[in-house]
Image 1 (cartoon, rainbow, N blue to C red):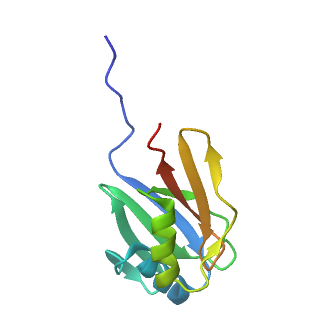
Image 2 (image 1 turned 180 degrees about the horizontal axis):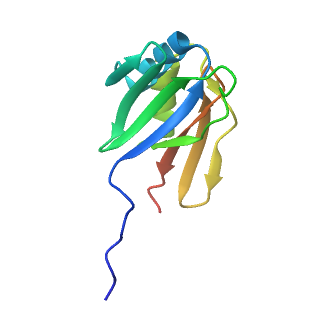
Length: 126
């Protein structure tokens, strides 16, 4: 009989250090399609990106752009990139798609501070 999984807790937060808070807030608002769920100050924002999973942005000019990738599962990378390119002109794709044969497709994009945000597509044949 398999033991049930045990977790340290039930809430997950992922914090990324960012440079210009206003520029990054605008970028992530476009990426996620909505304003932050929580604004703690002019330099700290949070979005709930999945149940009990929070993406936090904290302005840290000396520690910006060193985070990630934070990976978000999407149904289709192609469709998601097309939508994001419309919302975020000049969207920077860090590298071409990485194919893990028969299982996953991954693509990283860069936020204005250089943090990696990954798009993860589970292949239909997986």
